[in-house]
Length: 497
Image (cartoon, rainbow, N blue to C red; front, side, top):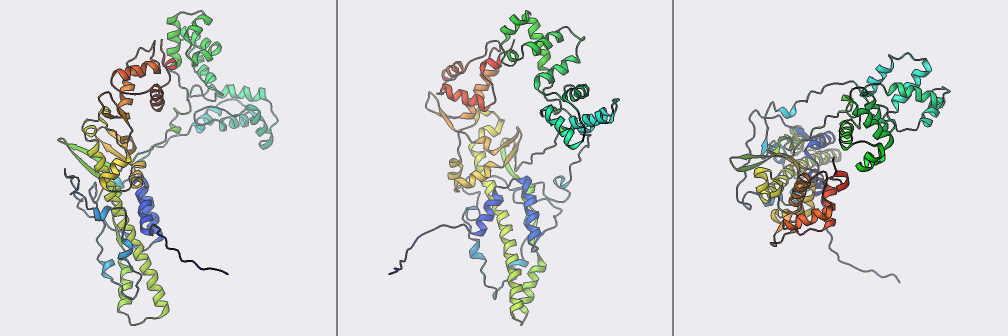
């Protein structure tokens, strides 16, 4: 016999408004405008308000950590559902018509004629491939040879190398160009292309790239011949910096070796990357602006975080017309339901934008208070150990919320641009029992390596001992980990003549 059971359980579900806020929170400033444009496209009840001529005053940071925020407005758990009932027979039109344009909350650069709204002029350049094809046209080649040359140029990677096997290029020429050729003919055309500018172009590996550049310097200095011998006969020893082996094998003096290596290290290992065609203009848009005014730190949001949005008056007037109408048929009911949904969605989106601004500022202001000494002068040794939980506890939010803010946001300071993740670090104990940031240890480690004798660079064991002598309790494996994180090679590869 089938039995019925009644179970009671407690579950948590995110409302659509909370989900919308979470998604907006993790969007960086550079992508916010695209997200707003997308929302305006799917919701005609959301409109962009005209900018006022007067800029919005900045909200100034106070020294009181608790009084400067309105926790009811900025807490993670939203109560938007309670404000918008699905009661379409009792519509309050003033909720939509009297909406103020969303103004810049603690913004910089708001107002008409903002430079942020103007397009950055971009210079136009000829591409690397176009330049090589132009040079190919000056050669006296047959039609088939010209086709082979174009095939080779088309196989050049962005950094200037041809990494595709020549056998594959020969097969492509047979299959797609109907040209029956061989490796020798392709190599013959390749050698011609390798004489093009920039020097080193169309090389098949690093060794060939460097040799091509050195051959153009032959006759200018005797050391160039020594450099070519190093690449031809001692390339493995060269990349591993086994300098005594090179001296013995080539029977050269230390000065000759030093001069030759100096010539080699000034060559371009990526000839394609130096072309103007490969230069990509990328602009980092900071989410926060931090100014030091006579020792007082002021945080403000980038003006792009404060879009001028409003509720469509025409849509609100539709509800007004319905409210005054005596007609209550099914078709009218469906129309008003649709309009009400769009108006609610527009209000939710504007509220989510406002809450995004407040949450960003609360998080950034907390980071500034925590790392106040660093922001004053930009000295990395003054960074304090700080984790997501520290900020979350101070502002009364969940760790995941702080993580969403920190993972994709950056701040522009008087000392440069920093991602917010830069200010979070683990702690390391000192002999005095204090906890210091791993950033500070990395800063000291880099200083020690920068000041070391490059002829006898310090091993990780010696670096560990020196850091221990300075009071930092750190193990050798941790030294190796920090060194790798800073892209510093091992001692042998740091050696110089």
